[in-house]
Figure 1: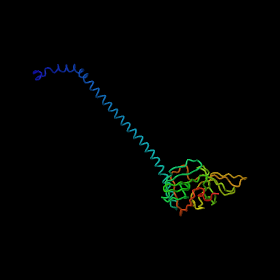
Figure 2: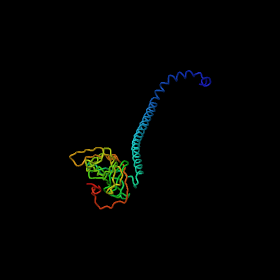
Figure 3: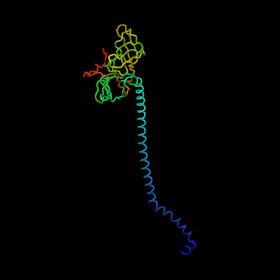
Figure 4: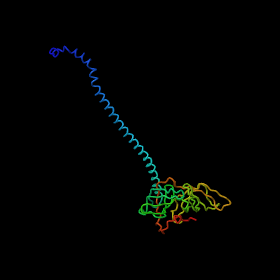
Length: 266
């Protein structure tokens, strides 16, 4: 031991013995190293699974936000169109959002988020960025019910923008079609003519687009022509409307019949 300590005579013997003992050391350490390896792998796998789940949730949230962004962009475009439309009219207007739509196919009614608290009144005209949408039939403090111009019980005094010919546009029960049922066969109306509100009766302010004539059928055996009009406003896609104040609100007589609102209805 003294000679080995001083001169290292047993170094080669120790090296040889360490080579022989190494497998024993590996065998003794294997359970501990295997345990540490398994724990590390399981810990890494759990971490990866948690990160994967977090990334998946983040991705879903991002997709939902992108979808909402598309909806917001469309809403922004509609609001810009409404604001641009309101800048072109001389009357006072207020933007309102449609809250619900009547599911009855024969009654075209909507509910908007403005009421008497905001100045809305029964009979008030509703516009979109493209034209007349309808008018309010019942005004409550914070909401109002409105009838669309396509409702079969609604009628609207109009005139042909080209020549001033007056007529009555009646709802057909179809959101994409109105009719002019009382035009004589010899009336000066053509396909493509723009119909605007005439202002007669005071229910609607004059000069707002109502629709475009799409077809005319003249039967010599009938006194009136069959005229089909496409509404200027997209009644089945409108989400926001404009409430229009063109003058002093009419006094209510307490009647809830929407037909009394359709001034000029035959």
